[in-house]
Length: 525
Image (cartoon, rainbow, N blue to C red):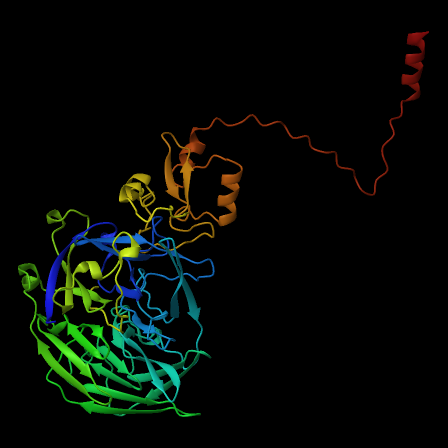
């Protein structure tokens, strides 16, 4: 069959407003999951991970649950993601997620392991665990790559590249949030013991990020990428070989020449050792509109330009675009758009780019309402995302109606409660131990009454619990003085002063004179 590039327009539906630059997909067999939502998770899906549902060219995201043993996985933009397989048939059973930026723009240095806990009666449960690292731990970063290499019957995890904030001791007021490329070190991680070692290679002197990395056996090919210091997209390809010798691994690097220079591209695979690179940028103002096939042999790499799909006018004229690999030769592309032209609150247009046999359709890609109708798909390989940017139980139904979700503007959790209020739904993090997805609020009993954030009122957690448990009236900082002024002063009882005994003196005894005694005697005779 003829392999062609096809482009399909998708209709945005449930939860697609959560899609933002830097998101990721990971895939377990028939199931594709969306990860890296906009903002912190809300009541509708506290895990922040969604099952992707495509039906009749309609894109839906359905909430997914985690097992009770799982740790918390924050939404991360531009993390490094790769698949891990322990079976001989290559079926993916785990994903590694490292680094990325949280909704608070903090950069993570943690390594998470995602696995499929259970899939019974169309209810899918994931498991997330954090892997502690020892030794030369990679610093917090985003826009980097992570791969798994196999050598001498062993495997290791390789982390390279990325960006991070300027170290604290080098920051100035003007450049407090400035980012720099991480040092061009190779981090080698033994996943079984959590040991991490760092290795420097003379062939790479400058750090860069938002590159593409492809691995086969003990070789990793690093292609493209952008250097902040030089503002350069190098055409070089770095072939890194990892030999897992007993005691001390050997890492070598060969520099290969290429005519391609790009950053922020996406790589997908439709069959083993055959990859497709799409999207990205050739310069700060020029998108990469061509598509290239990459063929990996045992010790070599070849590039072949393939015919691009018929790009729509919106894609051609858009200055920016982003997306992620869905596996099985499919990529979700997003471009900024006018939400007035769409049937959802999403501010993006969505397209499905596919590379495969001509008769393949969206129905063979991922969830179709009923998970039993899904087709098999190839596992997802490592991919990098685009760089530009900037109390609950789920129902037994596998569908979700956005009308059931509370309107945050009506419930008033994110109101400006006072002149000093600075709580924002996109940057807020829990302050009290009783908080989960919303800030704690308390009712001010002034005339008319209104709600205020307990954190803005500087209430301690003990005071907040005491007011709630004892149902006590509370007045906010702006009304407490007024309330006191309107109160009638209470009548105060006089205070009896206790008698003070004199120390060192005998008590005085009253004595009458003889004349007074005589007068009284005569008076009563």
